[in-house]
Structure formats: structure tokens, C-alpha cells
Amino acid sequence: MKTTTGRRSHGGGRRSSGPLRAAQTFWQLPDDDLDQLLRLAPHTDQVELKLLVPSGAHEQTCAALGVQFAHAPGQRVYYLDTPDRQLHRHGVIARVRSIRHRSDDSVVKLRPIAPADIPDSLRRSKNCVVEIDGMPGNYVCSAALKTRLDTQDVAAAIAQGRPLRALFSPRQRAVLTPRLPRHLSIDDLTAFGPVDARRHKLTPAGFDRTLLAEQWTFPDQTQLLELSTRCAPDHTLDTAAHTAAMLRAHGVDLNGPQQTKTSATLEFFTTLATGGDHPGGTRRAGEAGRRERTARAARRR
Image (cartoon, rainbow, N blue to C red; front, top):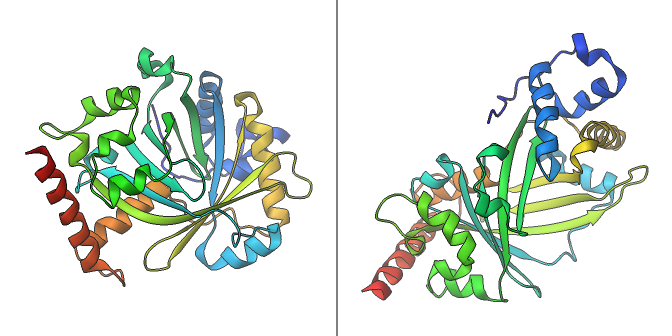
């Protein structure tokens, strides 16, 4: 599976036709990479288009679109990985989430992965979703397996030191366990988090689908604002074109630097745990991680 490198296309050739040129306003991909995306899409369940809004434009963007997070249910998001992020480096993402007044959930995601390489046992699951995650200048195919948990399950595992394996279904554990480093179990993983997340769904004027706005707030109060929408694979081009037109009409910059929320979170908490320069809680974060690992080791004895 090829992921793009974020290069910008300057048009020309086959991209001169109207629909393709309009879609490129969002995708901003070299011609060959856009062709590859369009060939890949029919082998997936859906395509998700994402845009990370530049940090200096959060307030303006929310005001223009009518996004309000004040009354959105609070969420606490954690990623589970080794301290040196071996899972992420090898294309495995394990995320758990607690949601105020709703059931918690967990997801195991393989990214990047080609649809032909997805294990049959995973692809047959009704809870498995194969999708293209795309943003300007980049896209990747992923396979995600999600499960619902009881309320407070995540808090019990993270804060109270209960086994992390209880946050995953047997099918999720069957996907995750063989991909762990040797001699490690799910219970040995480190929690990277929490991030305070809030979501607001809306339908902007002139847009024919739901737009999801997500605000992620880190312990030092820095924030990410991501806008996203999903579509069926056969609507990849027109959805990209309409999304770009709608965002530009609301003054949203499509040319800012892009990064996944996963990478941003792992990098932030890695810096905290190693005593980096992020303000607020650096030493406490490292100590909390050590306490969690000590408690889990004691329970296994």
C-alpha cells in the first residue's frame, strides 16, 4: 500500500477536466497518486476526508461554520503503545475512549494496509470498516475493528490499573496480540493521554452531507481542530470537490500543514514522558506512567 508524501500537484494532463480539477482543490495530490486513490476506493467501505485547521484560524473557522463545542459531551482519548511507539511505527493503532454519559469504546486499527492484505477473520467481522483516510496532500488505507464497552471501563483500566486487555474484544485481541513486540502483552502497553475531545456535527449551508468538527485539547491547552466528512467510495471525487468549495466559501484555509490526531497525540505525550519542554504536568505524566506499569506488574505476579 502506498501512502503519499504530501507533494502538491500543479495540475495539467488528465487533471484538466472539470470534476478532477475541482476534486484536486481538496486532495492536492500528484496525478498518479490521485489515480491510485480512485482505483483503491472501490475496494473499501468508505472514504473519509479530513482537514486540520491551522492553529491561528480555529476561532474564525468555528464562527464561520457555526461550530459550538460548549455543550458537546466530553471525551477522554488514550492511545496504547510501547513507550517507544513500536505499534504505531509498524502500522498498528490501539485507541480507547471514555465518553460522558455514553458507553466507552475501543478500536484497533491497521494503517496502512492494502485491502487484499486484510486477514479474512478481520474482514468478515461486521465491526470491521475498511476506509481511505485522506487529507490534502496525503491518504492512506486502514482497517478498523471497533467495540463498545461499558461506561467507566476505560477509567477503571487507566486510572485504577485494571487489565488493559479487558478493553478489547476477543477478535480485537486476536488482531492486536500477534503484532505486539516479543515478551509483551496488552497489559504491558503504556497509555498516551488523556486528550480532552469534543465533537460537533453540523450541516453547513449549501453542503449536502454531515460535517464533523473535532476539537482536541492537550494538557498544556494547545488544541487541534479537525473537520471531516465521509462518503461512499463512488462519490470520492464529487465529495472532495463539494467539500473544498464549501470550506473555501467559509474562508477555511486548505493549504495548512496536515497531521493525524494519532501522530500528534503520541508525539505530545512522548515528549511529556521523557521530560520535554511542554509546559504543565511533564514530571507528573512520567510518574503516572511508571505507577501504571508498576501496578500492572504487581497484579501479574
